[in-house]
Image (cartoon, rainbow, N blue to C red; front, side, top):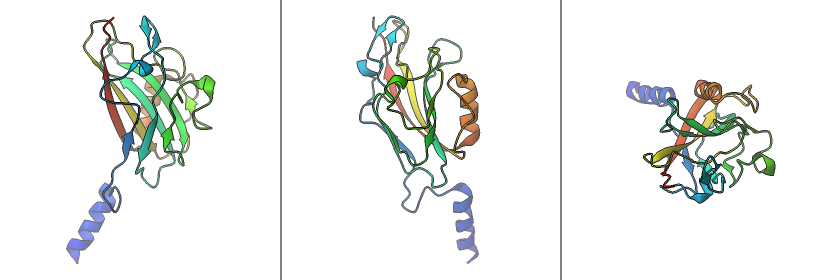
Length: 184
């Protein structure tokens, strides 16, 4: 009986994903191993379509109060990486972002969500645009399950501040990585 009580305690302490062992997972029908012209920035010498991909998540923790999604390039030659997309305050009853939700002008993003400024200097999705000839860059798409309904941020809150808040309030997170190398 003591062993059973210990196992139950440990599962409660470390957090069992759920009764079937399924984990919080991020998926996309648009993302593969390499980004396409759709997810490449239009500007800074890049000629992509700058369309954010569709993203879906499953098996979020039951106590999730909101979600956030970021896209980050740790390989950008800045010393601090490059934030390509930050969208927060996604309602807890949402489990996806539709394709092109990263365009604030189109109102595709979930109601009540906030797209904050990226390293391109404006809110919304900013696609890949590494320097010509640089090694392939990693683009990390991450969904955060948060323990708060809203982060106290707006469209001008710097990416590093939001990153801090996300990590302070994350219950769980799931990521996908795609690569892109600019040839010309």
